[in-house]
Length: 174
Image 1 (tube, rainbow, N blue to C red):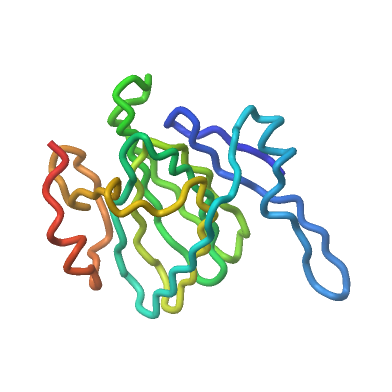
Image 2 (tube, rainbow, N blue to C red; image 1 turned 180 degrees about the vertical axis):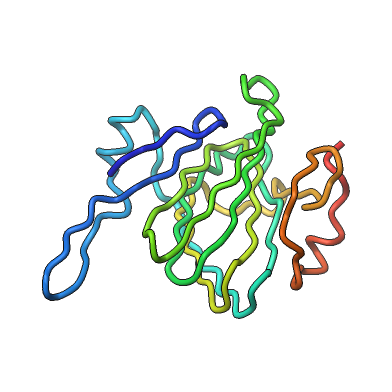
């Protein structure tokens, strides 16, 4: 398992060591020991699946405020996504920076997102399925979000076609 540092402090693209033979491909997509080697304390508390039948479905920006420690690993089981993470940790050296990462089932990679970051993704293909490993339980009282198109961040997205009412009802970040 390779951990590739991204622009946001604590954000990693995860590349897996694949083993191929006549049966297909095998790889480990989570290993506590590998995370510990990187000095990342990530214990899975919950897993989620997001099934997105339509291309250009947007989900986010979502996060849980403190005291939640909602870190996550996101991987794409089918299809592909454009994932955007924004660092909203006020004491972070990368506060308010964002990073775009494309993840697909073809490249079989994942993203580790540290607690205190907001996350959103846009599906780039039909029938995209995302699996989340969550570092904290869902806590409705701590759940927050803000608009995907907030001009404060000037993020250029492909045009979304499907967005939930909840995501459209979020206020701007600032």
